[in-house]
Image 1 (spheres, rainbow, N blue to C red):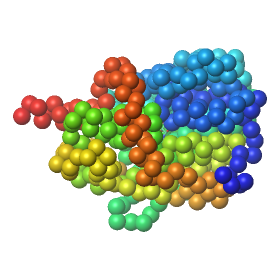
Image 2: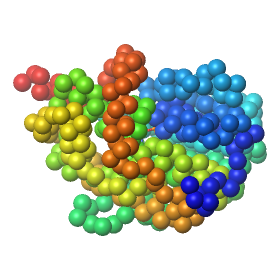
Image 3: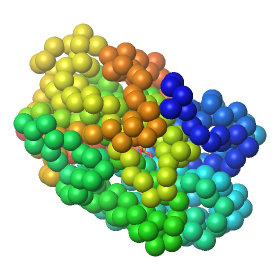
Image 4: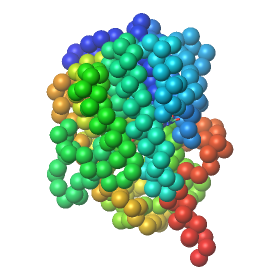
Length: 358
Ligand SMILES: NC(=O)c1ccc[n+]([C@@H]2O[C@H](COP(=O)([O-])OP(=O)(O)OC[C@H]3O[C@@H](n4cnc5c(N)ncnc54)[C@H](O)[C@@H]3O)[C@@H](O)[C@H]2O)c1
């Protein structure tokens, strides 16, 4: 790590409130922070929705530095009580409804409650509590909408929001509240927009673990539309390190885009997974396009690179192979997730239902 990439402040001796720390990125963040700052105290505040999983933070259950509080960020009383009791120095919010397909097929109200009302409650608590030095709101590149496949454009921090699906619209709503709370009351908030993450402990509704599970079950890999949708894939620990820098070095009111300059379309991801399992392209099936499906995302991460010297450290080939291997080696984790929730992808379930009726 270059000197510039080092965090200017330390979390040792501090209280860090992590909201949504039982999910994919939040749990990887907690692992990273405990490893780096042995004297930090972490409060993990999580509602444990279908994607929240205490197995993801099992390593810390008996750790005196770790406290788990089950609660909903959309519940203002509970949020206020947690701030009052633990008086956090730092706050980072991963708590969100995150699956685009659910925002389309299941409904958007939960997305509005968590991604907008929940963020509002956290901002209010930071504003009123007065103990928080820095609050990071973890957001997504999906707020910017879609780029053309044949363009070289990238999303910068100045790109106008143009969300195309309810998930992205609610994330944009939360981000706008952060901007307003900083500009109106000086709330020390930094907002980040990262592109697609991959890595261990991701709920198997998302592309990579979903495909790996289907391979393990001997099923085909369903691609939406023509499968040429492009995402900029970032390894989850690179994202976590960027978030750590935003939390400790970020100037309040700043927005940072995070991406690895690693554009790949869904066909390429499917091909890599097929290759890993020694299967042919006959295992790919094309299914109905998802409504509002964005064509391409690409991130201009030059600001975070310039300000903090951050850059992605993990090489895609190795980190991708390690990720696939993690799911093949953690069958117990998969079985527990499957028993708890069952349905992973409502869009694919609908398609399989129609297919099986024929
Ligand atoms: N996964 C990605 O590729 C990606 C990319 C960029 C940004 N993000 C953003 O990162 C954040 C975390 O994403 P993730 O993939 O880890 O999501 P996830 O679905 O794996 O985890 C979300 C966590 O939040 C918890 N949660 C949900 N609603 C809550 C509520 N109302 N109160 C308290 N806890 C609640 C869940 O129980 C779960 O533990 C999200 O804000 C998402 O928009 C994700």
